[in-house]
Image 1 (cartoon, rainbow, N blue to C red):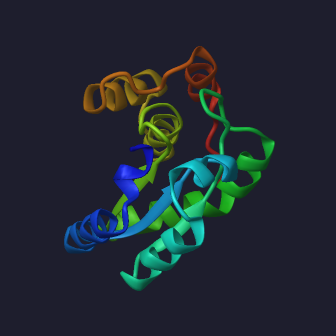
Image 2 (image 1 turned 180 degrees about the horizontal axis):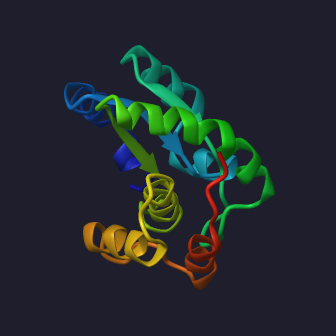
Length: 148
Protein backbone atom coordinates (compact mmCIF):
# COMPACT_ATOMS: atom_id res chain seq x y z
CA UNK A 1 0.00 0.00 0.00
CA UNK A 2 1.54 3.28 -1.19
CA UNK A 3 -0.09 5.20 1.66
CA UNK A 4 1.28 2.79 4.26
CA UNK A 5 3.84 5.15 5.73
CA UNK A 6 1.18 7.75 6.39
CA UNK A 7 -1.67 5.58 7.64
CA UNK A 8 -3.35 7.32 10.54
CA UNK A 9 -2.15 5.17 13.43
CA UNK A 10 1.34 4.69 12.03
CA UNK A 11 1.72 8.41 11.36
CA UNK A 12 0.58 9.26 14.90
CA UNK A 13 3.22 6.87 16.24
CA UNK A 14 5.87 8.46 14.03
CA UNK A 15 4.88 11.95 15.18
CA UNK A 16 5.08 10.85 18.82
CA UNK A 17 8.59 9.54 18.17
CA UNK A 18 9.60 12.77 16.43
CA UNK A 19 8.19 14.84 19.29
CA UNK A 20 10.04 12.75 21.89
CA UNK A 21 13.25 13.19 19.88
CA UNK A 22 13.12 16.99 20.02
CA UNK A 23 11.92 17.44 16.41
CA UNK A 24 10.64 20.99 15.99
CA UNK A 25 9.65 20.97 12.31
CA UNK A 26 8.85 18.87 9.28
CA UNK A 27 9.66 20.27 5.84
CA UNK A 28 7.90 18.64 2.87
CA UNK A 29 9.37 18.82 -0.62
CA UNK A 30 6.63 16.79 -2.33
CA UNK A 31 4.36 18.59 -4.77
CA UNK A 32 0.60 18.83 -4.16
CA UNK A 33 -0.10 16.18 -6.82
CA UNK A 34 2.16 13.79 -4.86
CA UNK A 35 0.37 14.59 -1.60
CA UNK A 36 -2.83 13.33 -3.23
CA UNK A 37 -1.15 9.93 -3.71
CA UNK A 38 0.59 9.97 -0.33
CA UNK A 39 -2.10 11.00 2.13
CA UNK A 40 -4.80 13.49 2.96
CA UNK A 41 -2.77 16.71 3.08
CA UNK A 42 -5.18 18.53 5.41
CA UNK A 43 -5.09 15.68 7.97
CA UNK A 44 -1.32 15.39 7.55
CA UNK A 45 -0.85 19.05 8.47
CA UNK A 46 -3.41 18.98 11.29
CA UNK A 47 -1.72 15.95 12.86
CA UNK A 48 1.67 17.65 12.70
CA UNK A 49 0.33 20.78 14.39
CA UNK A 50 -1.43 18.71 17.09
CA UNK A 51 2.04 17.49 18.09
CA UNK A 52 3.35 21.09 18.35
CA UNK A 53 5.61 20.54 15.37
CA UNK A 54 5.95 23.23 12.70
CA UNK A 55 5.33 22.36 9.05
CA UNK A 56 6.93 23.97 6.02
CA UNK A 57 6.10 23.18 2.39
CA UNK A 58 8.75 23.86 -0.24
CA UNK A 59 7.71 21.78 -3.27
CA UNK A 60 10.37 20.57 -5.70
CA UNK A 61 9.62 18.44 -8.78
CA UNK A 62 10.74 14.83 -8.37
CA UNK A 63 14.36 14.20 -9.48
CA UNK A 64 14.75 17.92 -10.16
CA UNK A 65 16.75 20.69 -8.60
CA UNK A 66 14.97 23.47 -6.73
CA UNK A 67 13.39 26.12 -8.98
CA UNK A 68 13.15 29.90 -8.62
CA UNK A 69 10.01 29.69 -6.43
CA UNK A 70 11.86 27.37 -4.04
CA UNK A 71 14.86 29.73 -3.98
CA UNK A 72 12.57 32.64 -3.09
CA UNK A 73 10.81 30.72 -0.29
CA UNK A 74 14.11 29.23 0.89
CA UNK A 75 15.45 32.65 1.91
CA UNK A 76 13.00 32.79 4.83
CA UNK A 77 12.66 29.06 5.57
CA UNK A 78 16.42 28.48 5.82
CA UNK A 79 16.63 31.11 8.56
CA UNK A 80 13.94 29.28 10.55
CA UNK A 81 15.52 25.84 10.00
CA UNK A 82 19.01 27.06 10.88
CA UNK A 83 17.69 28.71 14.06
CA UNK A 84 16.01 25.44 15.09
CA UNK A 85 19.26 23.52 14.58
CA UNK A 86 21.37 26.15 16.35
CA UNK A 87 19.21 25.96 19.48
CA UNK A 88 19.58 22.17 19.52
CA UNK A 89 16.34 21.05 17.90
CA UNK A 90 16.06 18.31 15.29
CA UNK A 91 14.29 18.81 11.97
CA UNK A 92 12.81 16.36 9.49
CA UNK A 93 13.24 16.87 5.75
CA UNK A 94 11.09 14.65 3.53
CA UNK A 95 10.21 13.98 -0.06
CA UNK A 96 8.69 10.87 -1.67
CA UNK A 97 11.67 8.56 -1.22
CA UNK A 98 13.76 10.64 1.15
CA UNK A 99 16.81 10.75 -1.10
CA UNK A 100 16.75 13.25 -3.95
CA UNK A 101 14.99 16.41 -2.89
CA UNK A 102 15.45 15.92 0.86
CA UNK A 103 19.10 15.01 0.29
CA UNK A 104 19.63 18.08 -1.86
CA UNK A 105 18.23 20.38 0.81
CA UNK A 106 20.18 18.60 3.56
CA UNK A 107 23.35 19.31 1.57
CA UNK A 108 22.58 23.00 1.06
CA UNK A 109 21.80 23.33 4.76
CA UNK A 110 25.27 21.94 5.50
CA UNK A 111 26.70 24.53 3.10
CA UNK A 112 24.71 27.22 4.96
CA UNK A 113 26.61 26.14 8.09
CA UNK A 114 29.96 26.52 6.29
CA UNK A 115 30.54 23.02 4.95
CA UNK A 116 32.48 22.56 1.70
CA UNK A 117 30.10 21.74 -1.20
CA UNK A 118 31.67 18.40 -2.16
CA UNK A 119 31.95 17.39 1.47
CA UNK A 120 28.28 18.30 2.03
CA UNK A 121 27.33 15.88 -0.76
CA UNK A 122 29.59 13.19 0.71
CA UNK A 123 28.16 13.63 4.22
CA UNK A 124 24.57 13.31 2.99
CA UNK A 125 25.39 10.29 0.83
CA UNK A 126 27.24 8.63 3.72
CA UNK A 127 24.10 9.00 5.88
CA UNK A 128 21.58 8.08 3.15
CA UNK A 129 22.66 5.66 0.44
CA UNK A 130 21.56 6.87 -2.99
CA UNK A 131 20.91 10.43 -1.81
CA UNK A 132 21.06 13.34 -4.25
CA UNK A 133 19.68 11.28 -7.10
CA UNK A 134 20.20 13.34 -10.23
CA UNK A 135 23.03 15.24 -11.87
CA UNK A 136 20.74 18.28 -11.84
CA UNK A 137 20.47 18.08 -8.04
CA UNK A 138 24.21 17.58 -7.67
CA UNK A 139 24.95 20.56 -9.94
CA UNK A 140 22.52 22.70 -7.93
CA UNK A 141 24.44 21.91 -4.76
CA UNK A 142 27.81 22.55 -6.39
CA UNK A 143 26.63 25.95 -7.65
CA UNK A 144 24.76 26.88 -4.45
CA UNK A 145 25.76 30.16 -2.82
CA UNK A 146 24.45 31.05 0.61
CA UNK A 147 22.88 34.51 0.66
CA UNK A 148 22.73 36.24 4.03
